[in-house]
Image (tube, rainbow, N blue to C red; front, top):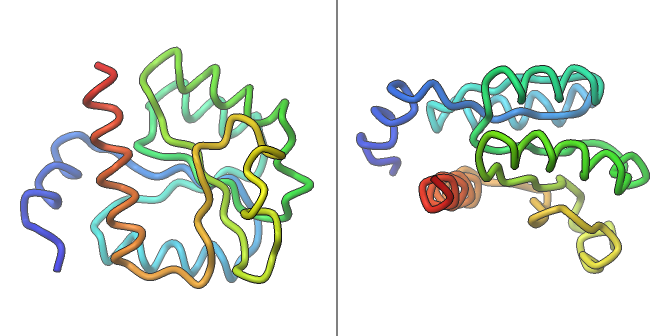
Length: 139
């Protein structure tokens, strides 16, 4: 069960999760879970869109969706630079449980961690709380 204080926090701070990706099924799944958690989701189709949105209003967290070959070090560094200029934004990559990409985090420098599908709301809520704590610690 999601505490009422969380709902209040999300409304007051207007925080959101920025998702960089285009896979409709994944976006629907994330949108549904984030909706249950009362956390708005903004989708960016390109790095430029993500950078613009993150620089205007820093998200609580950035989720990289799609294939791991799209998670280049340059992309993660670009997002990290925008994130670090405004606050400590958690950046995670979303992958499937059968994909070996999440087993070798050292091959994906700059990513704070991995979300492994299938997701459930408890795991996502825990990650959102961690991202919130990280931002509060940095400020």
